[in-house]
Length: 104
Image 1 (cartoon, rainbow, N blue to C red):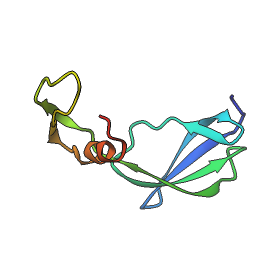
Image 2: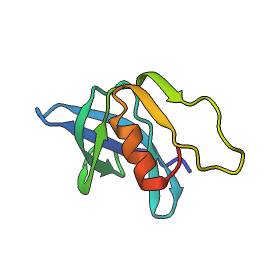
Image 3: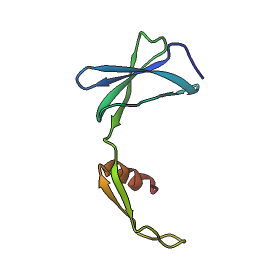
């Protein structure tokens, strides 16, 4: 649902701000597109009018892209149980996700 002036502001650690438009997904959930951010931690603020921002309790962390991802082996048993190894650069966030959710 579009809402005129609804936006998210992302504060980098050295006090630079990036503002992006937002949309409501429901009455208590909104979304902001995030693209082109450098790796690092960002504090998140929200505005209903595009001028006054309210600092939230949330932060966002951007990770470097995964490069040269490879999975071994390339196949396994249909009923599961095959141990899979992920190889590549910057895979730590992917591996943490797999450990938490059990899926890749």
